[in-house]
Length: 346
Image (cartoon, rainbow, N blue to C red):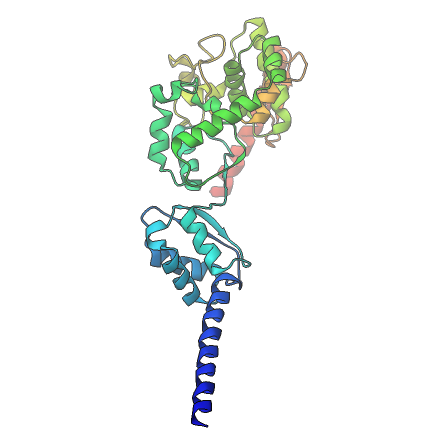
């Protein structure tokens, strides 16, 4: 009787141990352990405990002990790979930990958007979205030997960066990032686009230069082809471009208003003083501006000025007399507007 009792106790103990370990196995390897989607960033040298705490709190882990066991088994403290990891509610503990140990990253969207008029801003935009430091990017943008490998110089490198959204790994090096943008630049310049540039007597770089001027003139995308047409008409006639954005570039975009005295600056970018296109882009030109230069509106306009409606559009003219009438109308409207603002403040 006693032997039977001991046998039952032993069986129960074995069953309990079996249930315990099976339960652990299921908890670690088969059961979902997270309640919400979370993007985990693992930095170089990040402590394993910090990684687990961020993972558990961010993704809403139901069983922290399960994460600890898997971290120990997979040697997370030794094998953690820097990266960006998207954790889904359907993930098990072991899968989440193995992602980090094996570097199974999720791609990061790198987006260039808005007006980018300086290398500092370009570097800062990349820094905000990628692991690289802005100082590294800024150094690369000024490194002539490095840029030579891409066919660019510190002066004209803006042309290589085409605003858009690109997928790449968060841990990409500066070289990886530049490689990707050069690949996208080469992909963008299809034989059709190159042919259109040649028809207009422009190189790819010259198209980017003119596109950057168009970009500096208006935020209204609908006007890109019209303004591109104005400048192409001027180039064909041998007229100076007289583009205000190039003057703003000469003064590092620090001017609130461009005055006649500013037009005297001696710079190859001063299109009031020197004929033809400036030597390099004055900002990062969007694809839409480049395509506007390649596909401009056909018209006879040679001049344009801001609309007196102050709606971000312009009025275009074929003759200088018509242009001066438009300019005077704008100046009158501006004077009225400034007077009204002054009265409102008094």
